[in-house]
Length: 284
Length: 138
Image (tube, rainbow over all chains, first blue to last red; front, side, top):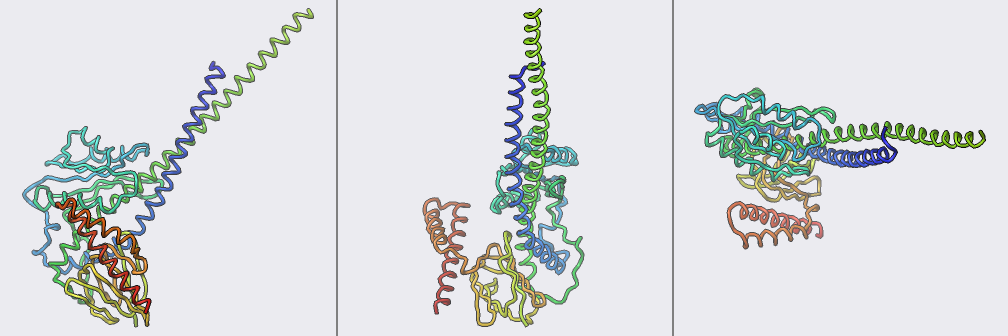
């Protein structure tokens, strides 16, 4: 039977834990709000950019495609960009990402770019070749973080060192559901949207000059969108994980308190019995 | 007849209003768009954009991007855009000085390019802000 002192200590510990997790839950909730706002405010831009890219690429010659849209034939090397948080304590988010990495097709050579310390450690431990790794940071990712990343991707894809660039990130379905998502960033396949048969449109300068610029924006924005989504997922996941931790801690406190009171009552009863017994002994 | 103008940046929708005319700098020189303009897609370069509605004109500083005109709907996708009256002159001046200093101190590669871009942005902001102020004071 635990003594009163150890019980009291355990209750105190559980209470401290619940306070910490509660605080983390609140922080995650406020960061989630910001992340969602960020995602919402960049949405019109992304939609318009996609629309414009579609319009433009439907007008362009099939044999005159931008290098971003052509799949190099001479290699089967793939470049994976994996995006994870820097910190843990966010439920199964990182584990799910790792599972996705392990599920990848092993055929051909693989390069990795990691964003976030968590996934960097895992990918390194699988003996994969990491060509660059960036920290994710604990605040809303700024647009500037995209530029060095885009530069490396350009270097590898345009020099035909890799045939595909694939992004692995976490899809923000809702606050309660985040699933890993694997998307092909390059080569860009705009054909799947189908041709748009609109009225005549003038392009100034020519489509051949406009498209490369537009596609650069398109790629940067896609990456940024992935970062934002990953950030929102991280915060949502952490918020839920910390809420569960807080609830569990409170449950433990409740059951410990019950035991504590039982033990205390038992002790008092025993003392009373002792006193009573002593009195009877005197009278007897 | 009027134009529905949408000025969108990666971080915000700066403007979504009806206007009568838009003047802005493009890769092929400054153009003015009036209602009934032919459908057009072009590149916007850094500079000053002016919209007019009735007698009121409104200045903007825009930094690169794309313009699409489609049936009197004008969409501008800018890397960065700000209304003239929202420009913080003090901060722009600070940015200008900072950029100039950075260019003097470590004029190499990436850092130089960033500083240069910052400087151009700061100068443009200052230009648009002062010009707009003059229009107001008249």
